[in-house]
Image 1 (cartoon, rainbow, N blue to C red):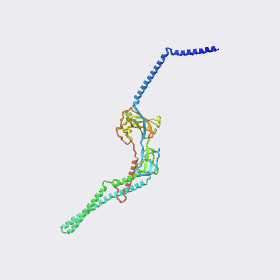
Image 2 (cartoon, one colour):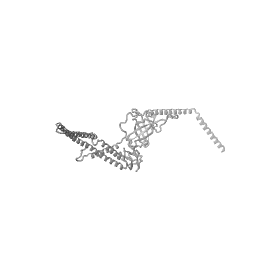
Image 3 (spheres, helix red, strand yellow):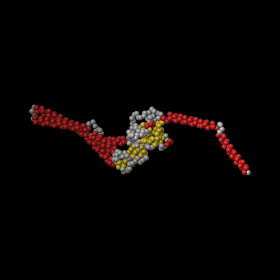
Image 4 (spheres, rainbow, N blue to C red):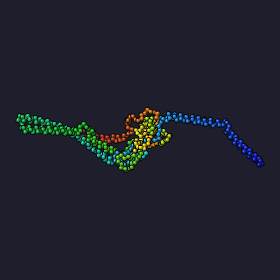
Length: 419
């Protein structure tokens, strides 16, 4: 049995030796070494084809899109921040809006204690009425002096006739020379009085010549005082110059504020734009009017905005910095500068997806259209942003002045008519 076991072990060892020899012999077969070089060659050819196709793709992308597009993520939403500042001193008694509130143009935002302004307005109104009546008196004086002038001329004519008659009588000896001398003195006195009245007429006429009550300088000066007092009274109520949203409210109830103090701001979110800071190396083909694709971080890639290049800055950001770089130093290092480019946003898209001032965006400018100018060629033809709420206040003041002049110029029965 031991002999059989040894024979089995020997057979097993012989089998393993044959398998090892078979394996080694298989690697030595003449046909096997030719397969690996061919496979490597095919792989290299495929890799070369892929590299060539990738290069062609990159070249095609650059020719079709890459060199006609410039993008930056150094772009932020900006807009008009309308500061609400008082023009007169006052104590705050009412605040009509808070941060985030929507306000309409002309809506009351802050109100001051109006008592002092109302008293000043009443005083100015009374003064205007008094001046109007005084000017009417000037016209009446002219009429009265004209009547005196006509009467004095008649007196001079009577004295002249009396003197002529007495001179003829004196020549025949009918009257004495003393009586003739008295007649001559009366004529001289009448003539002097006539000259005095004529001078008074010239002086009085000069005060009202070529004017009416409303256009008289004294009336216009008094009307200016009423206008100023009315505006001061109106400015005790601060109204919204534009429609927008309130931000930066700092005013508090009971606060005593001075002219120019920033109380709050109104931001019209329908008039926003983007300030994109492009590198100076990106501006070579950038022109005004080129289309822009905009993506805001607020909405991500789900919302796309469109716009156009509105203007290119007249200088780099560092040139207008509070502490501009001093390049004339020994340790100068060149840094690529950035130039702000203003981008107009499509208002319809902005109304559908509102943005906020200061939000981050990514802009992509399409440079294919090279017909636009590099810089603006014409000055603006109209104001880019304006309000007429203050003009309305002045119009109301003029209406009040016209009413006061009319009321104090109306004639009572038996008095001088209005001129």
